[in-house]
Image 1: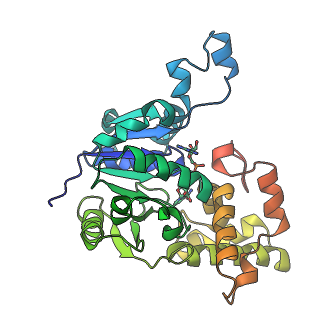
Image 2: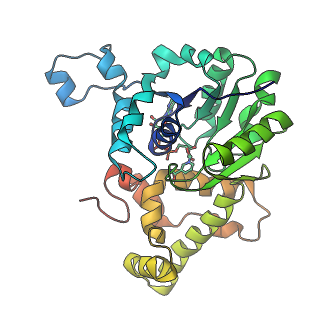
Length: 309
Ligand code: NAD
């Protein structure tokens, strides 16, 4: 079978989903971007007399996220004219539209229970043979494909884009127990040839390669900051431009990633790797738990280690 990718569905339009949608649109692929419907009206929507049934309200979350992504940091590989290739919808009204795409990419919150419900829906509506992949940061792939149809499992694996999806090169591909070699070979090649990435196949171990190492480094720093009495600014000075990483100083990166997401990934490693030598290191320090309780998730909520001004 000769596969071509003319249209993708991206489910979950947050930091990563909207970034992935832009990247595909940029290379000429049509994108259907989906997210959930809001449960409450905003003050402005109420004042305008809109209801939860209004179309503009039902598609508000997905449209807001995409608008944010389109605003952020234009790059030489991105041009706003590609935005017209992205159509925004919601999963309640329009999930059935995924039947008409060549590749479905799941990019919802890093929670196995939520992802499993999404995969159940995908399995119901997809056309057999369609690729289905997850952008999970670290949930084992075999947990997500459990209970799905044979055809789904054959065409399913992890495709982990790094943040920001439009710029970072690493593209981790994680096969599940039943992923076919045709799918794996296709994705490796597509990542390199069309997405402009470096494809790396990783084993289905918690947090795969990139985040097992990355979260280890970040968690080590969380503990060292307390132990050595360092400030956030000191760590970012030491782990940023001076060592040749102009944009990836540690705490700035955590704010961009989102503390909520980081916490799910660190907890996943802690729970799933009891034998790891560094097991205790993946336990979250109290100050991180407090920040998450306060919804200081980083850039997405306007406050993390830094305040967005
Ligand atoms: P985010 O919180 O910015 O966005 C998640 C989106 O999922 C939200 O818009 C939310 O409304 C939506 N959502 C929740 N339930 C849904 C459902 N049932 N159907 C459709 N949409 C739903 O999160 P993110 O940072 O974009 O992360 C998304 C995924 O990508 C996670 O699995 C995360 O681990 C992974 N990831 C994140 C990063 C990062 O740096 N943030 C990097 C690589 C991978």
